[in-house]
Image 1 (cartoon, helix red, strand yellow):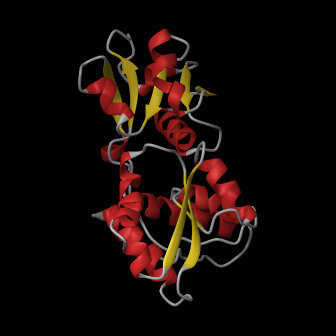
Image 2: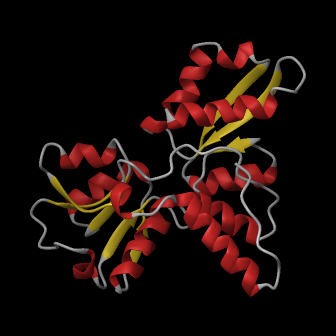
Length: 227
């Protein structure tokens, strides 16, 4: 339901636009389950009913979607709030208009079942596979390492290569979203070291705290994300 709400936010954004306005929608990655409502809305005719022609593009990670938004190649994207906070800090004129989900449900930091690692603290100096630098997977890996008080090395391999490189031993652990995380955890091939959906605080709260820290450091009044 939360992701349907996000689609509703998109339709609300363009409700006052002219008939059949084209809206370029950017998704961070292809084949990510929680993005299904974006495609379902098109199949069910919701965009057309609201006078919208949707052009949906799946990019190779959140940073690529963020770049598309900044360049005008996308009108609206799905990206997590701390990433938006950093983009705003760099001067990008954007704002949060809807929330897909408050917590990263289905996201796990995963090792193979045979791995000797049991906690994030065991990963000091180890290689953690992520999709790309500055991507959601990168932020989550760094967040987990900071919380555990260890230094890690993030290795950008791209979403399709996360599981193969983990299985081959090229990386020690991977940050995986659903359904990738469940492909290893459900059959018992992999183990979850951190269930990010349970361990992380709601990302909008994190975004507001990051934004407040940025504003205080730069001597500006704190702002609030527009939801």
